[in-house]
Length: 246
Image (cartoon, rainbow, N blue to C red; front, side):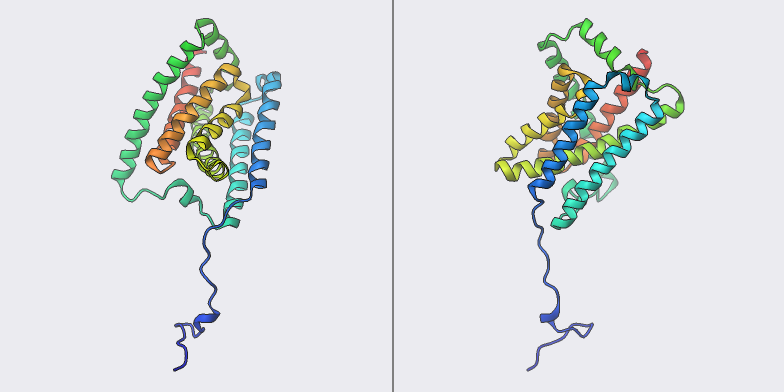
């Protein structure tokens, strides 16, 4: 008996085999890490550049930079046969799922604030240090309603892009390299802190700790969605608080 054909008339042996996901090469990861660290170093040494940059240019430039990095990661994932949806952890199947992730994100944010406050106190970051940090970061604070709207867009971009980059892609790659998701979590969190050179050493430590909290949240939920929401909430409130304190 002759072999059966598909509905299109093609014989089964001529159909392309299903492609299983591959692995993103480490050179791709090295390029991403190098870009993040080099730009962070440039930002740390370019205090005057931030102070004189317009908020419109600063916000839009930062959003463009983060989406370019995501595009680079998407290109690497696509070549390896991995989808962004797979890396994020699927999608919401109901409004109830969205609400649940939102509640988890809010709770994680409040918990993170307490942990960060305790860490800041342990590092001796008293009122003088907080005042210096406020002065150092005042260039980021939105002013008019247009800038507030752009800041919220920037916060959403950071929440999505940075979680995809650090808790998604980099944590995946370091897990494969180090053969431990917990070691990978620590390394990705340190890189997350180092990627914010303009914030100063003390705040970079706090940001690395925040990255650790977001990484644990992602591992527990097996999804980046709650961490993305927590990150977005944190950045949004931080910017609005800076605006109120100016």
